[in-house]
Picture 1 (cartoon, rainbow, N blue to C red):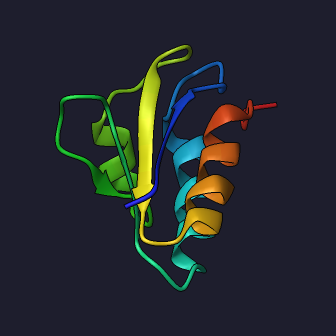
Picture 2 (tube, rainbow, N blue to C red):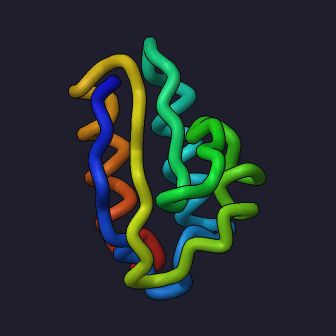
Length: 85
């Protein structure tokens, strides 16, 4: 399963606005993508609520995983951006 470790780029971490943008993008994919903190259980990236439960802050490293490398890369790229800007 492709996995990519990325640093959260949003200034407020994975809170409401960034989580909504990421979940919207993930829900449009043909494969399931998950996001999780290393060592913790990953959550469905298509759920903004579940993403927010991670409590990932700016600068935290998260792992993005899924069955399709392109989909993992797409969600990882969003996580790395400052989506609050």
